[in-house]
Image (cartoon, rainbow, N blue to C red; front, side, top):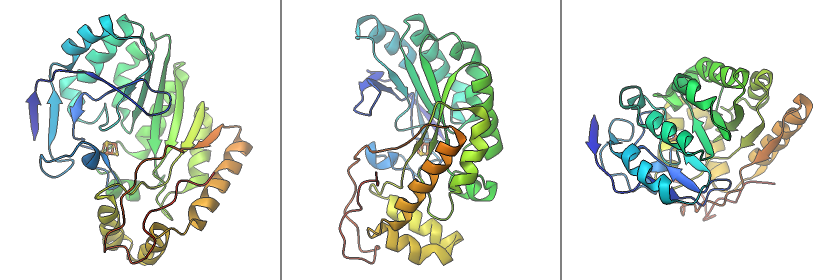
Length: 287
Ligand code: SF4
């Protein structure tokens, strides 16, 4: 279900490291990732996440005006949707925004889980300052299908990463959120190494409102044997993530890739009754 709306603003200030502005051409996201915390950030009330999307039809027109008066800065696509989720195939709002940003020579940072990004290679190649991040959480297509049902397959994402690099686009890889015992860290690093991404950013699960219940529901349905381990991790046991991050760092060092941990201190929710523990808030990422 896609609703078309008109908006008054296109660029919003971003507090994320490395970004000056966020540009979200859509509200909602058809990728429907189980762990997505965007619904709580944007106070989503338009139905089941992933099944309904709002297309901001006039974003390019608004952006065109804003680019004439805004101070030049890095524009991040997107912070609470994926700029290349399936609706973009039809609407091409992301593409039209890129055309404008290119015209005004604004630096751009894209993060996506979709191979549709390759459609815009002709534009991407012409930017003087652009980087594209591809998110991967697992190499197991069976896990991916359940976890990120609307996103591109693992193979398509790896191919997109490789094609972007081959075409001279600066790339990076986001391994996150790390799903304990499902994210195959070292194998993932090996799989992305041939594409030579500029850096790898690793992040843990962020328990914003609603995420805990969605993830525990997912684990209970598909991987009930992991329920106890997940509960322990959510209750503040840092051993898993500490070990995971150390392993990934070593592997990246060995493969010649720069690696960092996402240390943005997102606010996290207080645990609800569904977490059987007494600790109130999960700790920040290790390192
Ligand atoms: S791609 Fe990003 S915004 Fe879209 S559902 Fe997944 S986590 Fe949320």
